[in-house]
Image (tube, rainbow, N blue to C red; front, side, top):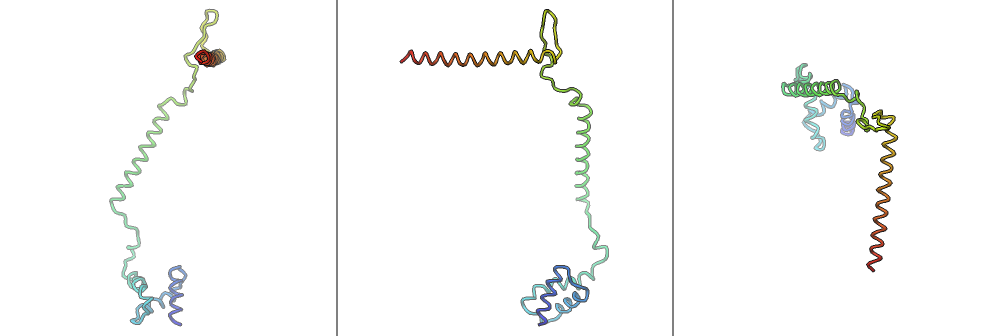
Length: 156
């Protein structure tokens, strides 16, 4: 019956649900000589919690930071800072927002001897010209197809 209680206490211990009194019972149980074979695997764990924790100094629980991770952190932070400086520098000195892309920039038309370069005025003219060119290409493709068809019929 006592072994069943110990098994329950072990389960509670590993789930963090034991009281100090119950933990003392476990430490005392595993300090005995006669422990069932199937519970022997827990002996080193409870021996550490009973003796090892007492032997540690209070400062042993403070995280130990070696110089190597500190150097690594310095490199990480300096890399982040350099990246931020690069982004800020590009943002300030590169004219991305200052000039919007205009596909008609530099285009012009001449109407009655007057050069017009206002994009709002020339855009419809350019689009009309592009439409005419695409229509001419389509007509040319149809004519070529018709010519090839007639040539094929003539050969037969």
